[in-house]
Length: 45
Image (cartoon, rainbow, N blue to C red; front, side, top):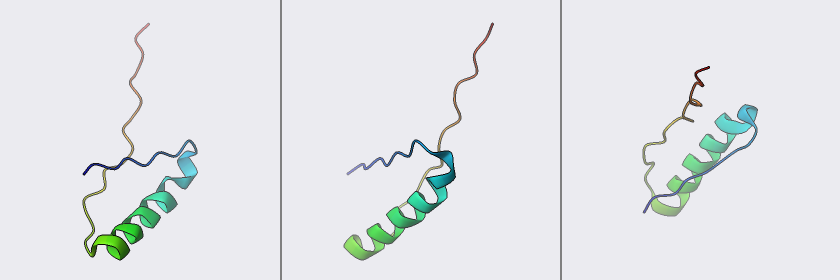
């Protein structure tokens, strides 16, 4: 199963990641790998 969690506010990413890890521990007893937010693609002019 793949679950993606999004946050529009960059300042909330750390809190959302921690909450999701806690959810995984509570529901499944394990904490899967969490990937950081990818960088936005740089535009060429």
